[in-house]
Image (cartoon, rainbow, N blue to C red):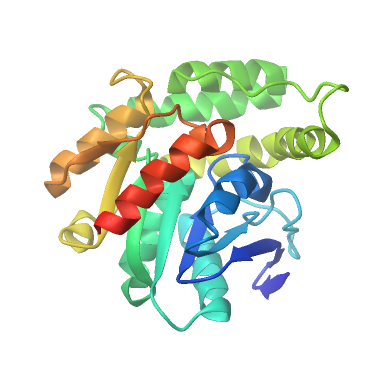
Length: 266
């Protein structure tokens, strides 16, 4: 555990070598990175953590609207506690947004950022329309509950929803899914609308050590589009990983190969 302003962060460390920090998006937690971390631990000290307000990283203050810069400060303090050297960072979805802002605010701590499908809807045509759509999901949660809201959210992203925590699943998998489902409340109540309004600092990111990556689910998905627009604005290529959006959890062998190639190439 690491005490930070307003929260106690739960984190896990495996392996040895240069630090690689993994940052989850949405309602994920450290468990989603366990298999990937195991596969990268032969060449990296792999660090993953539950973001504040999620799973085992409990808030020490009252919950309220979350800010990207607050989550960036958490990542900054975690890296500071673990290494004095620049680290590789991987972030996915809103975790990639946190990584982008970490690279801007603390460039001395980031050797390379792999931003996997960042949520930067402000780059889309008519961003106010997209902000309203995410606000609507949060409102739908308040009025109709999590099932209706998550159905609308997965439709917006163009992705499939997570599996249910069935009783016949192995205990660690069932417990992970239960934690992730429990995080939905925090995500929809305090994170979603605010995180959807994140605006990356394009000037500061131009020329920074950054790789933009997408899944193989198709150019029509929301996160592929936002990543491609960011790449266009920064004059960067887009690297396609041979898995879907949560391939780091469901197809860790292939995801680890793609990550290793990206990290070695840079």
